[in-house]
Length: 145
Image (cartoon, rainbow, N blue to C red; front, side, top):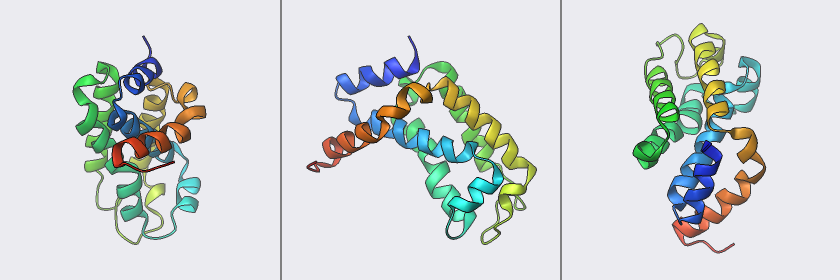
């Protein structure tokens, strides 16, 4: 059974927090997999602060929400990438420095993120992610569509 099937099973079992965490993590991984120029262009303010909140914290949230339910490969990949994010050097992760994405450590993050996107079957889930996120947010937070 592939990861996308697992996500659909969670959705069918009303595990909306898990599905929401997966969607947010896939978006985060998508950012981390971008090349340096695309990363710089998509961040309006402090690159380190924005990358942390938009692209790294969702990885931690997915691990916290789903760790025991994730397939071993996905969990191990997420844990490794989360560790790499936390281990970025001062030169690679410095507030206010728009050039951080050019640092070599970011290339390692890009490669790991790309591998995780494949493991998580992002291509199969992507067409449905926005609708799933809206529906799951509504269910989790009591929002009406």
